[in-house]
Amino acid sequence: MRLVLLGLPGAGKGTQGDRMSEKYGIPHISTGSIIRESIAEGADLGQEADRYISRGELIPDELALQVVHERIARPDCKKGWILDGFPRTVLQARELDRLLAESGLDVQGAFDIRVTQAEAIERIAKRRMCSSCGAVYHLEHYRAKGKGICDTCGGELYRRSDDTVETARRRLAVYMQQTHPVLHYYAQDGRLFSINGVRPIDEVFADVDHFLQMFVGDEDVGEVR
Ligand code: AP5
Image 1 (cartoon, protein in one colour):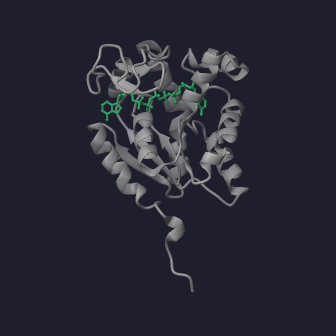
Image 2 (spheres, rainbow, N blue to C red):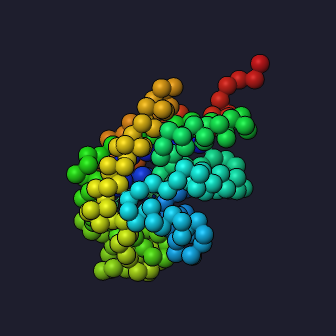
């Protein structure tokens, strides 16, 4: 399966991407997480990206494409991948299709997880992340059992630097200007699947999973004649 997750910042792309990856055993690749790791490591890519992320702006297309190109070339991506946070511009979407076409492949489905802007801001403001394993929590909907401690690995929970309400508003505006057109790009040829994201996490996943059945075992379908 080769899938992309779209939706406003805070819509639940990462949350659903983790579930999809767990169930189908293909990597969940978040460009935002890769960039944040590069920033934490002080890598060149991270240093360049940091000034965009902290302002809620997109990093340049070439940088984002470089990140994805390198990541999907790794052996664990042979059976497919779930891209989260990429593509974020029509140029990125076109370049991804062009790159895949060189190997006779394509993006099979783009899932748009829909929430209102008010819900997105609320989720971002109350999100907490594990500094060790990256697990995602929410102060009300998905609380860690111990205060400030990750249930899975015991790591310390923190708030992302771009999760302030002010930066979140800028990220939403950037999404509407630069990423919203990507929905039309995938809708044009029937690859867009729209999901109501304003429901409990399990219900959203059930909907996503319903559509995923279309892509499972594609290679086994059809008689040999
Ligand atoms: P990125 O890390 O991709 O951030 P984002 O798109 O803004 O998305 P988020 O991670 O904020 O939210 P999410 O939709 O994954 O929601 P989550 O599951 O965590 O990008 C960050 C930055 O990197 C960008 O601003 C840009 O600068 C740069 N960047 C990345 N990719 C780029 C690219 N391709 N090109 C250029 N720049 C790029 O959930 C949010 C919260 O809600 C959590 O607390 C969760 O527990 C809770 N939650 C989830 N689902 C539900 C539910 N159903 N009900 C209630 N609560 C829920």
